[in-house]
Each structure stands twice: as C-alpha cells, then as structure tokens.
Length: 143
Image 1: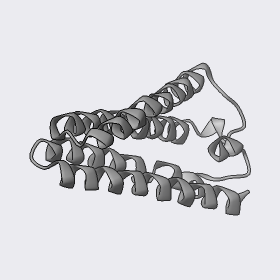
Image 2: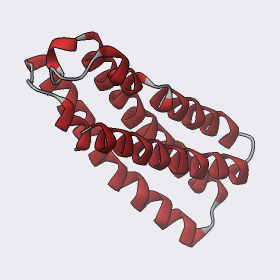
Image 3: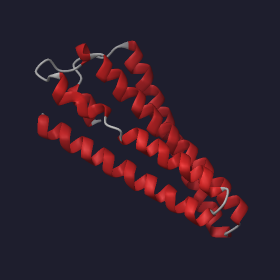
Image 4: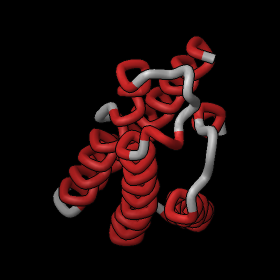
C-alpha cells in the first residue's frame, strides 16, 4: 500500500488498525457475490438486502481507513522524518468520512428505493476509488 511508504516505523496499535482494514476489505467479496446473485433474480427485497450488506461492508472499510489515517496523523513520530506536518495533513482529508456518509445514505435510501440506493452505492464506490487514486498520486509526488 502506497500509504505505508510514508511510514518509518510500525507500532502494535497501527498494526492492529491495519489488520482491521484488511479484514474489512475481505468482507467485500461476500457482498459482491451477494449482489451478483440477487441481480440475476431481480427480487427487489433480496436486492435491497444485498445493497445494504454491501453498504455496511464498504462503510466498515471506509471507517477503518479513517481510523488508520487519523492514527498516523496523531503520531507524527511514525512518519518519515523529512516530511513535515503540513505535507502530511492530506492523510486525514475527509475522503473516508465522505465515503461513510455516502454508504450510510445509501442504506437509508435503499429502504425507500432500491434503484436510488443502488445509485448511491455506485457513487460511494466511485468516490472511494477516486479518493484512493488521489491519495496515491499525492504520496507518489511527495516521495
């Protein structure tokens, strides 16, 4: 992960947070499979459930990334010494929190409209992907 290229040392707490991130990422396979299976049946109730399960997994992923970014920001001794706090401030950008908000909105909206809830789910996926690319590009430019 490009994020860890800016870290000079790992603490047990950071390691645990990273394991939580990795665990949350593994859940997405089940949620993706569930959405795929329900799309083939087009059962609205099942599709609503699948969208909500996917949203919960994605929300958990975003939340654990937020935990990691905040932990590293609050512990400047973990970062490479040549970087200063202003250069590293981008790690706690609101990208993961915005993702959490989008996925949470998708959960609520899915109870009223599966199509709009699904659109919010797609918006969250797109937002999460672009946020990761943006962070990766910033890390590469600063490296």
